[in-house]
Length: 169
Image (cartoon, rainbow, N blue to C red):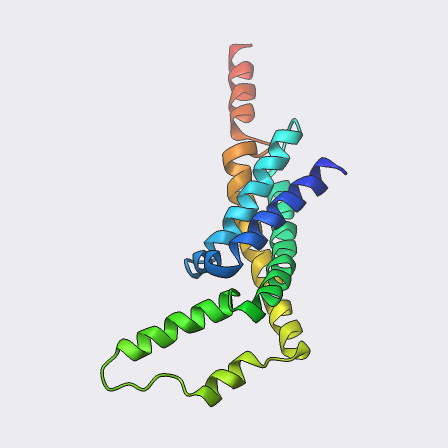
């Protein structure tokens, strides 16, 4: 496995886990879990190569985000029967908030049944949307990770040093 593939896999696992169950609530803060997965992928890749450009960080971050979307979708689908998927947890929290509001009725059982009985087409549609969204935020995380851990291969300090060398000569 190449360093790039390994970095993408590690970032996808981090993103997938942070998008599942109670940890999925982290993503309510501007997809923070996906950004963290992109940063982790870029950090892993920066540690494996001698020089990493920002484009490399964006690339591994985007693919880690996309892989994390697939992984979190599968994990959430597997956890749905026991009520530990991120949708059930969020729905339960919303129901609790609605019950705490005076004069408001909680969700009806019919409404809950409609929400929980999504078919394969609904799952795939949601997965496609999440895949694009996670790839975008993973790329942002990868760019942040490249700036922190790898820097840009064409850094400006090299240009300044070259200009100073010309002045000295």
